[in-house]
Figure 1 (cartoon, one colour):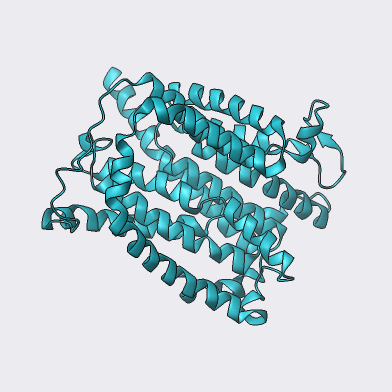
Figure 2 (spheres, rainbow, N blue to C red):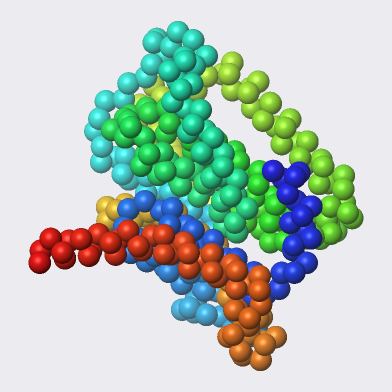
Length: 374
């Protein structure tokens, strides 16, 4: 997908301005709402909270610190790693501590690493759907592998005839998200190499690495640095092959790790999380932020609210604001520039269509319930 569509997308990228970038990011956020499981209102609320958290820090245009509450550490914005570690790492640990269930490992029951015909029948459609979903979401700003995995798991759980097995070893719940993860991780290079915008934090690090080597990511990277572009594609093939070579012989070791008692894992995981967060900026404030977001993530999980949309809004929020303000500066404050430019208008139409896809079933159900009551 990257090799086939990167060139035409790079030609399309020359038509992108601030208005188009803003509309594309709005489409990515609405896509996250559509694919999030659970309550639609809660998903929208989580995205809005992520957008608000993304406003914390120094304003790019004026240089004034916003919502920092005179805390110097917040003038550089909230550390993304602290947010992610807290919402996904600490919160998951707290949830697991509450569960006192027996874990069963199957080290003595595995007879062959090769899937059976029944396994093939169940996981091939899930893997195909995961690949397609990950390919599309990977190209959206803020999508990437994480959102693709969550979306694929939700999709498979809704479509599977074995929904009760999810969480207890359903092969569709493994194959689909893994395929989506691989596809999303690789197609996330498309917006980086064609539009010059990172679709996730890993790609943001790639931008930094490319800038250090005087390489400007954007539409011209394939012509100015073709060895970089094709080298990336070759590395993906080699990397996937090496994963197979390394993982298959070590499966026994990974399974044995499941035998480690929980009371050893629980303190170890938060310690390593804190070490990782501290090592980024050598700042203890980030560690406290991680703990705070861990408590917040635990509260979200108790309320049935997914943290993934919040993370997406947090990443895209500053970029959305910057491009919106830039578009308004170029149009002298005229908001109609978002709908008068054809490409931007097309992206906004696609956004409205996605909202309608979600809203129409709910409206129909409300009308049916009202009709029955009448």
